[in-house]
Each structure stands twice: as structure tokens, then as C-alpha cells.
Image: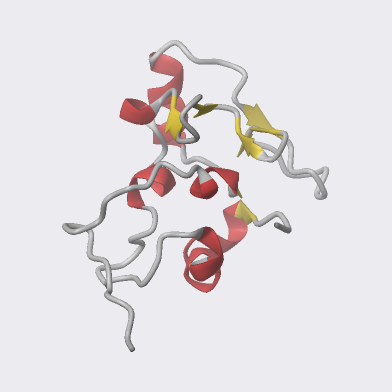
Length: 122
């Protein structure tokens, strides 16, 4: 049985927060937008490549802006100004997807954001 494919139009986020565990570099427009909204101290150095900086900060493996709600869902404190990679996820192309979980999109994420991405082991 084939799994139903999800399109950008039919996508309904489950608010699980799994996509908020990818470490990536926001672009300059993202940084300006987030700073203009009054946020600071949201970037960090790459955990293994000491010469690389400017990655979205992770705290205990989650994006610093991720909020874990009491009902088990997650939300984003900067949703309206979130980075482009977050806005696009999981639709990095016009193709439909089977699932929105990060492990199902590693290859496409690597191709699109390879220079700016670190994928932690789950």
C-alpha cells in the first residue's frame, strides 16, 4: 500500500518539533529579520568545526526558539520571523513528500543546505 503524499497545500503540521533539531546557518536576511524582531544571542559556532560560526543555536539538541508545550506539542517563539529554511521545510522543491520527519528528508536537505547544515545523530 502506498503512503499518501503530502503537498504544501495539504500539509498540516503536527507540531512535534522534530524539524527544530536540524542545525543550520540562517541567511543574512533571516538574521536581520530575527534581530529586528528584538531577538539576540541566537547564533552559535558549529559544534565540531570550530572555524565555522553563525549556526542557529541549539539548546539540549533543540532550536533555542522551540517551546515545548504542556500538551506535548511544540511551537516556535519566532514563527512569524523564522528563517527561510524553516519556512520551506519540508518542501525544499515543488515535489510532494511522504512524511515531514527530518530523517525522511536528509538527502534533499543535504543537497540544498549542505554547506550550512549539521545533522545531529538521533
